[in-house]
Image 1 (tube, helix red, strand yellow):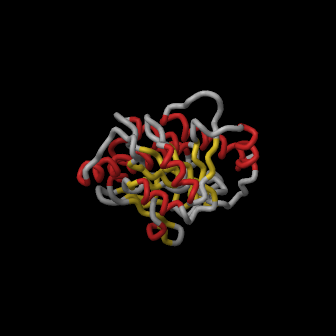
Image 2 (cartoon, helix red, strand yellow; image 1 turned 90 degrees about the vertical axis):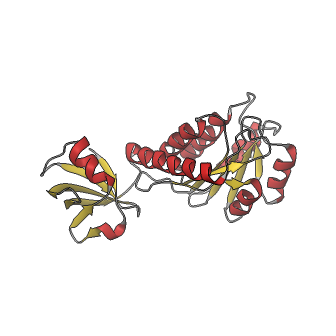
Length: 245
């Protein structure tokens, strides 16, 4: 069933209306007809099964057939702080992080990051990444669209993470898988969790020390060194399993 997002103010009684680019997608790309059903999420963990009642060039009017609470969101909000990678790797990371349950994705400019974005390029990139996040949310049945924040400096990212309950830093020099297992096993449902991932060159020792000073926990992901596009998704997969089992 095709899946679309609306804001809560687009839900009125037993009706929902859709405007903007989704109208063209429903009418001209999918070529849906009156009476067909689709799924709507309102960003507040609610899902609606709806039937198309009316269609114009500007608006699609839907009748709510069934309403239920969503069950696809993790019990904890996971924030992925991703060091800027080269090429188009960030697009892939955003898409897969959304599928694995990330709540927010924060691009971070670190010391070893090869990519340097000026304000104009960064704004276009963030717009593109948010579009990919929306597509990933639709595909994976999420009830919220994870937000991709503006690119932050490392210090800004650490300050943003200070309000979180748990902050993890996968680090190739960290030791002890038993310690990692024990620490992740203690994370409780409802706690907010930040994951800091370095770029291709990894974190500098000074950056890891700065994170530890604000309460972050360095962890190991095993004996192999993972690529930047693999490390964050590995932690997300582990947390998804832990929180949903």
